[in-house]
Length: 219
Image (tube, rainbow, N blue to C red; front, side):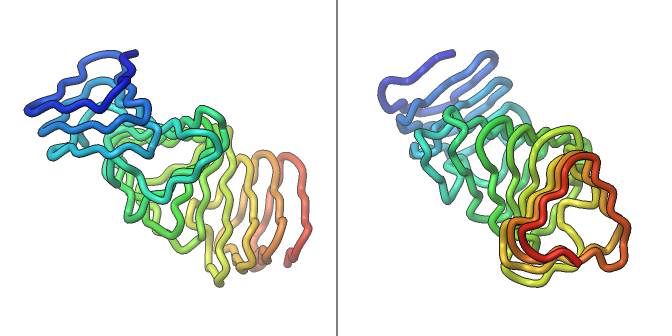
């Protein structure tokens, strides 16, 4: 791992072949980034990269303290995207439609789509060991949910027909004031929690492998 202690300026090409380059809160300027490795960022840096690599390599967000980031400083298009909050308390949100051409991994912290669509590559995988948050209005393309770990949280305030992340989950949490009406049978391999809002089964079956907690409305 190579950790910057000052802003880095590369007037031509920055090539990452192996290991990790960690900006550590320092700004990075380059004409072209070619990466077969990992660019690790806090999320608050300024990344002035004219030509970003979205065909290979990983961008990892680690955050600082319990800060929330309303945009992703590398942009909204990636090859591999890793959310790996160092404290476990950071929230990272795109400010537009998010595209991940490789794999999406949420190891620690929260990835909050906040109403923005998510498009994955046809061969992409999703690994969620923490939390992915959605309003419920997002369109998720080529998204195959991680049903062995992680929480999917819906916190919208509207009326939603169907669940944007599909019909099979590990942990499923409703925390908004919205109403979610199922359009298919729902499978929750671990815990289902309704902390607020309404979950309407729409006469579809429900299979829960763990515990069921209802603090709001279940129809």
